Length: 215
Image (tube, rainbow, N blue to C red):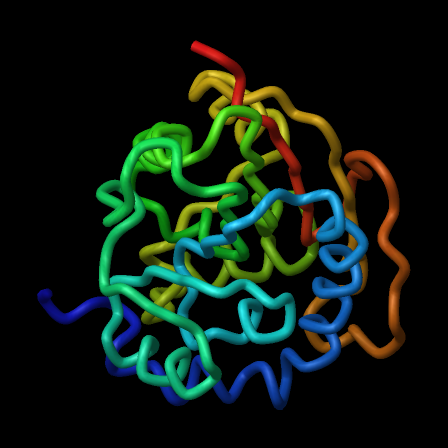
């Protein structure tokens, strides 16, 4: 597979979770962990990256187009496949839950990825999309970095809640639950936050749980 955007940034990207992003990551995990008990297995994370979320949440399998990032994920015990979300190496109706965790921003074709997720999910399967909202402080910060030509974020796209929900429904899903968190911004994230139910304006990290509807 051709070199990806993240390959030459893999070590820096992974180290962020232990440095500047450490508390933000814990806040995101705190929003996700209460949702896990009701999610059918097997689980897959698209855009698994270096395996940080998968390791902490117990997601067994991941896909990512970056071989460099997948090396980190393998070391964290995740079974990985080098693949894009638009073309998953799984048969129809074989997965219980598919996760997108801060991956939405780098999807070239989000609707195509959602339709591919629909294909591989079992009937009543779940989609968990934890994305960075463009109206939160982190999203706004990254949008500004993109304008300044940041190596990674100039390739990213940040959506609002209505857009993400609209595409999710268009792909054949019913939104069951939304959780919001990470109201502190970059450089000011200093205390732990409790997730809030529903979409709350100003949240940087929004988690949408959706169910696959019958065709």
